[in-house]
Image (cartoon, rainbow, N blue to C red):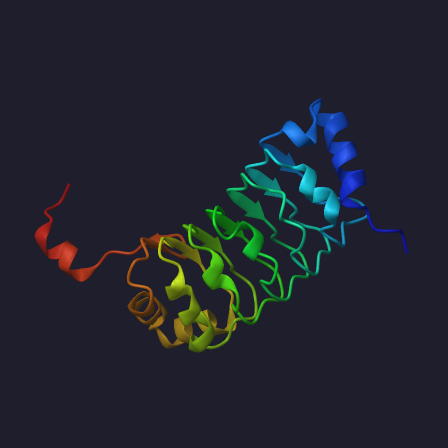
Length: 193
């Protein structure tokens, strides 16, 4: 088995390719490393200026070591082995977009810390009950949610009431699964554009 790539090694590779220092960069892409990254280790704390960090398509199991990322706005962790949302508290006050589709998340415990989160892509995970889904109502700014491919969505889409049930619980949503959410009362007052 090849040894996993460390964040430090991935950053060194990225710096060489990008021709800039990771510690000064606004966007850092560490996706699809070969061999894959397994741990979000302490080297991440050097990314003080990073606004968008991509760690998708690796083998990360836990969200960790985000404390130093004081400017992080977008975190991309799709296609990993993440099982829960612990570790996000460190960026709870500034993260605006979390892309975490294709993981193993069943429970949304801890999501409430994301006070600025506007966009959550959490498709193809393992969320299966409304009790968990309801935790998304604690996100005051959430407007764009992609939830397709979770057991909860699949069940209710096959029953034909997904959109209705989901938007009832999250009345502030503007977009669900890529489709604009149009509220009934708005429709009545508007003519064709």
